[in-house]
Amino acid sequence: MKNPALHDFIIQYQADVFRFCFYLCRNEVYAQYLAQETFIKVLVNFDKIKDNHKAYLFQTAKNLFIDNQRKNKYEKSFLSGQIESQTINPPDLEIWQTLFSLDQDEQEILILIDREGLSLNEAADVLKVSESALKSRLMRARENFRKKWNI
Amino acid sequence: MKDSKDHIIDQLKNLKGPQPDPYFASRVLAHHQYSDEKKKVFVWKLISGLCLTLGSFFSFYFFQKNTPYKFDYQKAPIHKSMMLVLTEVPNDYRIAYVSLEIDEGMTFDIANASLRSKKEITLAIDSDSLKLGRLPFVFMAVLAGKKNVKVKYLDAEFEVVKHETYYLDFFDLNNTNKKPKKEIQNEKVFSGTFSPKPIAS
Image 1 (cartoon, helix red, strand yellow):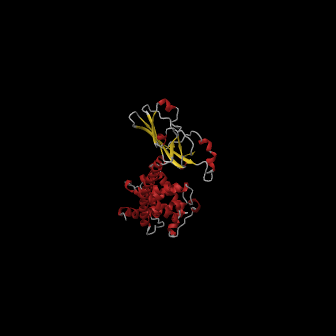
Image 2 (cartoon, rainbow over the protein chains, first blue to last red; image 1 turned 90 degrees about the vertical axis):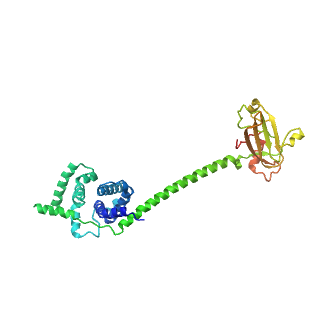
Image 3 (spheres, rainbow over the protein chains, first blue to last red; image 1 turned 120 degrees about the vertical axis):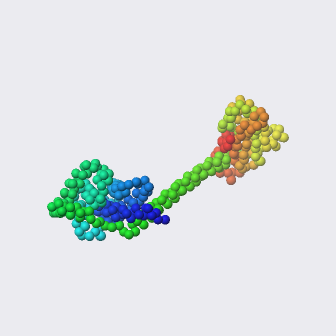
């Protein structure tokens, strides 16, 4: 039996979560698995989530990704660090590549705030840093991104 | 300069990644529902398993308590006078009499012919006699096979205070063909008194 609330919830956030998972692992196939696991985990406690759905989903995806890496399953072997996708357009691919050329922290900040539109507060929760620190890092990350883009 | 800066960040804002397949939501929902069902099934399996384990345990316990096993039958030869040696001497001040009931194929080994034919004899007993650990009855088996000897301890009003059953397996010393080797080796052990293990009390 289909639960309409759950279905709408997935439809609303699936693209964002999928994109964030792709950012984490850079592999389309693994991103699919990670996004699916993220939703399954979140849906178990769906009633307990009050707000910040997007931030909560991202946080869960990130934790799952880290857990899987720690478990040292097959991920490490097939996550080459290169972008592995058949569906990204070349112009977008160029932006992704520029993004991935930045430091890990800067990538995360730009993805969460500039791409996914999280507020500073929400992004600070996901990244577990203070808002003020995040603000300065955001400025620096944007600057570095511009520099890399112009090269 | 500012416009070009914003343009770069705008590109980032419109960055497209790979899209989930059209069945993503349905698949996640199905998986979620399956997990729920699996959890319920697991709980029921756990409950059933626990009930089955407890049931088996108690069935085995009561079965063991009330049924003598093969190894609970003490072996003894026929046509030999026997006395029961108590493994546990009852320590109850109310005990005034003790009664011994024997199965068919067994007789009391008493000079008095009328008593010999009886299957149950009750005698007065005091606590000092009980402490010796032997009951004042001598009996023997005339037929081979499994027999029971029931011992009842009675108070002054002939009410049962305690009862025990001893399980005996008599064999014929002369019939060596049917007798297993193990029993022959143990013959001398059972030539006099023996101390069978009571099963229930």
